[in-house]
Length: 190
Figure: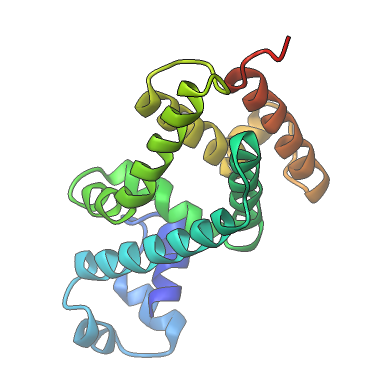
C-alpha cells in the first residue's frame, strides 16, 4: 500500500490521488486501505515517514564512504541522481510534500532534521577551514538542495529549456551541476 501511495503521491500529487483509485490499482477494496490508514492524510503521513527513512538511509550509506570536502558533496549529488533514476517517486514525494506545506512538510522536515543539522555543521567546518566560500550555511544548504533536486528531477522544466531527460543528458546534467557547485563553493586554490 505504501509503495502504491508513494508512487501516486510522487507522480500525480496528493490531491490527484484518490483512495478509490489506489484500491483498484492494488486489487483491494477501499475499506482495506482504510483499515490500515483511517484517512488519506494518515496514509500520506505513513508515506512521508517511510520515504524520509529510506532517503536518510541512502544518504547515510553514501556518507559512510564519502570522504571529506567537496568529495562529500559530490557523493551526495551522485546519490541523489541515482535516486532520481531508480526511484523518481521518492524524490517526487519530497517535492509534493514541500508544495503541500504544513503539516506534511513539518513532518518531513522533522524526520530529516538530523541529516540537515549534520550537513549544516559540515558546511560551517569547511568554511572555517577555508575550503568553502563563507556564506550563510542554512541558505547555502537550501540553495544546494533546491538546485540538486531540481536539476535531477524537474522533467517538465528540463523539457521547457530544450533538454530531453535521457540517461546521456542526466549524466551531462550531473557533471555540469557538480562543476557549478565546485565553482560556487570551493575557494580558489591559487
